[in-house]
Length: 144
Ligand code: DQA
Image 1 (cartoon, helix red, strand yellow):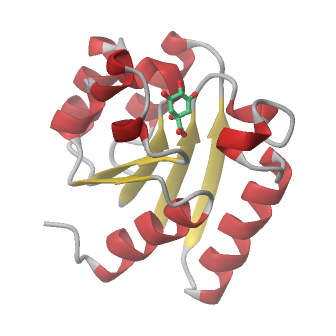
Image 2: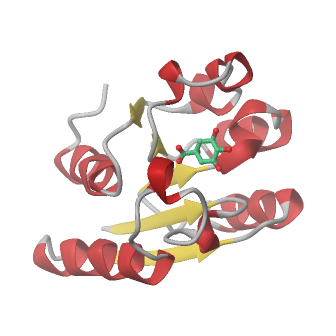
């Protein structure tokens, strides 16, 4: 099994950006957690981060035919990007949306998620553990 874990804009700044909201652990620490969990579950994982919407679309498209599940934190593009929604729909790969913070308890503009409509599940507000929960859902095929 191969999983792709995608992070959108500003998630490379984890540990630096708004630590009260996103915590003090770095993007590299997140990558290590994801890689360690993948190794423990005996699955292949690729990590990708970009601040650019089109690059994220390209990465999702490139997963077609070679990836069994996607975990995506689209960052701010969650709330704006029809292109990312369409890309996930286009490839038809089971995808779980993750947010480190509980977006449901934040500003009104964060209540809207374009990506959600293409995702089999959304995990929000569980910190970095949300990525692991999302991987577990895909590996165990417990996502609806
Ligand atoms: C986020 C929430 C988004 O609203 C925000 O723009 C992010 C991170 C989260 O992980 O909580 O960049 O997706």
